[in-house]
Image (cartoon, rainbow, N blue to C red; front, side, top):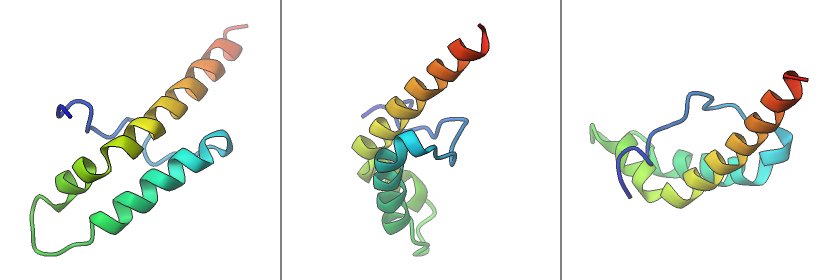
Amino acid sequence: MDTAALRLPPYFPLKVKKCQDASDSFFDCFDFNSVPNGDKDVGRKALSKCGSQLQAYKACMDEFKSLTDAASRR
């Protein structure tokens, strides 16, 4: 997975009810894998290990954001 795909989105750590499952899956994975252990890259490694959960979180939140943006333009 490329580094751009492993970037945290600007709305992180926002969680909306509609995306609860995807959010919980990513946050649980990231929390488990990002425990400080003296490794300065632990955060990046956690994002890499949780890449599929991060993509699901971003997809759901981006869909929610686009829906709310469209509704606010009405």
